Length: 541
Image (cartoon, rainbow, N blue to C red; front, side, top):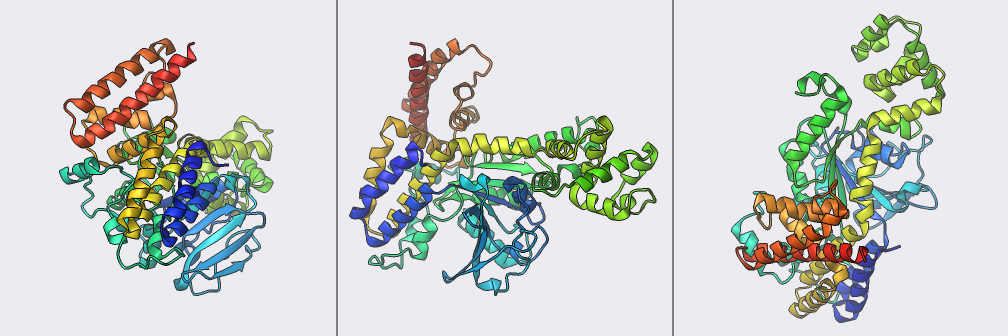
């Protein structure tokens, strides 16, 4: 069921449909469909970063191919369906329905010319997908230009500013001069070469409502330039709403491959090293992402998607019975682990290595040593705890699911504005603009204003002094009042006075000393603090 903000944008679309061209109306129908659909989360990253493995872990089923093959070159959307099936969607709009293979995965070969394929739709009777559509993307950095293009189209990378600089004076004046920021820099290009009499979605209009609404970006140990460029270019609803702490988080995958001694302050502990490295990456990517969390995707997939069996648990028990010196020698490398002469069959060790890798095997052996009578189910849960997946899911919940209404409404608003601009009709554009302004003037829609302001500051489209930018991001990146105020741990009775004080400060800043673009953001932050103060005041009556 749509939340109140999504419902308000849906109502706006319904009211505007009779007042716009047939093509724009068709675009609005697609916006309405998207508003009624689950939040769309794209899992993106470099090739071989473990995206598909992480997708399987998040879904709780090993369904996305992880070996390099033709399917890994395609965008695949995993969504809820009453019957498990695969739809191959061709570039010309045609579809071909296929079953999953005998292992329950997307077939390694689709039996079609993939150069003619747009993407894959995978429907699963999976409760996780009832309110979250997960999009697996080809890896950036691949030698396959077509795969990279598909990923860039999904992420909006083809529309990024080439110099990556959104903080120029020109950009700031543009942000100040527009009556509303739900317009896009690509509007001029989008308005050419179209037939206003068309009543179906043309490519330009379709692009205005395409793309994911949120992104989970998968990193490995080093953040490369194209990682930062991909995050900078990510857009929701292809409307130049760049990735920020509202709609993007990242994970440091394959955390078990980190050498703890290479990370200062880790004390030789692998998970401590992974956490410290994640914090550094979060700092370098700030404010593009809300957080960077360490995870071991393979361990998460095996323990969550049914890959860990009672036979695997028995093999770990037999390993735990080996003398310590032998076991430690075997765990030095994968080759030693599979070839060393011991009582555990080599085939069982190879299977464990494929499903847990050396770190997971070590975790499993330790769990068995602590609790010799541990069941296979309990051992699986211990391995899952060791993967870091729970923290990633918790962050997805707090950043995306809990704020899905605002994220979807903001993306839909951007799409509505982009569609109006693409029509090339000044009157239509003005009617849509006026309707958006009426909606945004309502107190209950202030969250949309706040998300807009946060996105502008996070993207650098409006430059702010560092301390004020931090405050904007804090107020806009969470729904927790204590966190918004930066007063977690302080007595709640102090919160109302502080909120009113900050509301007054931001109002003064908006009137004296701010640039026009900064003033626009400052008024939004002032209003946010004032509404917090009202909420706290009413709660004490």
